[in-house]
Image (cartoon, rainbow, N blue to C red):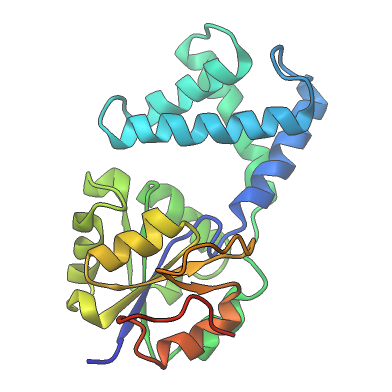
Length: 238
């Protein structure tokens, strides 16, 4: 049976999360200075990203709540034992710069137009309120009939339950759905293990995963979807 719907990751797939994060951190550090423990702004940004990944993993494992992982990130990044209100205030200042830098990748709108014959949904490891607001601000929320996120689902990618919940929201079987995301294991391999067609969007052209269907830009996606990619597909389409 052909693919009938495309499920999308959001951050660093549709939305340029890394670019916005870099701009936000540079702006905040220029105003507030470099926290102790970081030698350069680039080192601080790399550290912030590593802390984000680690504390989000704690949240996904049920070791903390959504607000707690944010506060712990701030405390560790600044190297200070802040009260909750202080950590929340710092995060709001960062978020203001981050939101001012929000943008879609340039290939997103063209490919959504080309794929208007498919149904579309979102499956993200973030929170629904955050991702709904983000996609609305970027003018594309109406393109996606379903939006499911780990915070509300209680299960996150690459767990098969997350992918299956998204398929159920579309009333489709997993083999009728493709999933597109920027992480080879969490997104593409996780989708394949759950019975979907997993497509790795490798914008940085890291390569090295011949086991996955891989594209380096969304302009390649329509060609991938027109083929049967579920069984032994080659690693790159162009």
